[in-house]
Image (cartoon, rainbow, N blue to C red; front, top):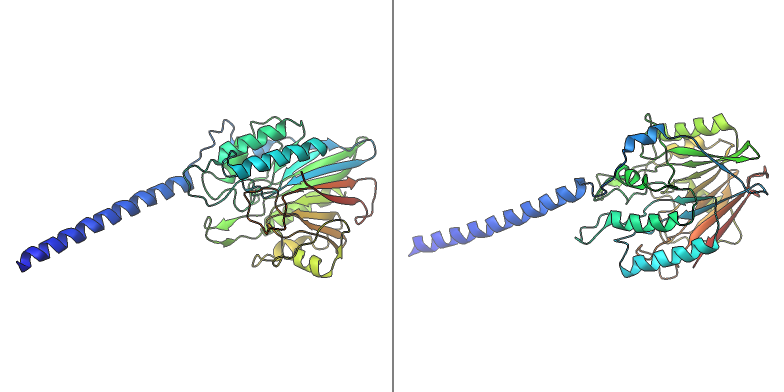
Length: 348
């Protein structure tokens, strides 16, 4: 009798362990697939970014150049209620806000999301097709969430290459998936430049600590800016520690809401970039997103540090934050870094 009971217990335990192993194996296989697959069906090769032609754009008749920044939309599938609301608002904003360049400044799509109906590239396609309707050059500065699942930043960029007005570039000798400079001309004279950068993500994906901008990226920016010798606006996703210093000690721009929900400098060991570009007189704006319920614009050390709250309804945020985009207008004929910029939060 005792032997029979023992056999029964062993059998039950074996069955339970088998079920657990099958479940763990299946879930592990699912995770492995989700973290390593490319669902983009891209027809372009990422490595063509290294041979992309230099992008040259022009000011208007008054020497102004307008940049519309969209950040932290966190699209889930493009068709859920929050995503539809975001796309509807973006259409209203784009209809009433002409611009010369649109910068998608990171976290276009949701990050670590294991729901089976998450559709990263379906959402990107709906968004990109909306942007394409306006015949405006647009680009993408990768965010920390964009690459976390269902394809890398390189996969996203490959996918975006199919759209006529998408602009891009990179250098092989530096870190990051997207680094290039847009040159802005007025009457055939170079008057401004706009640098697009990849500010890193997490290592390992989704669960690790944030990676700071690397020294070779910062040196690349310095070299590009110093070669041009014109005022330069820099766009990347995650703010560096200098944003907290600028918030505490800088002169706040009048006309933009200032929200200080949590510290602006949250990435450890993120002083390399700030130290490398600290004294570069040509870098007159650094524009970021990432901190969903924070919003600021301060002039400090002869440049603006500007951070925008979310542009999408699927992004987590405090109740008082209404999704918006940021319009930056640059008077390229003004040599004063404090007066050459004007900023406006645009809401639907």
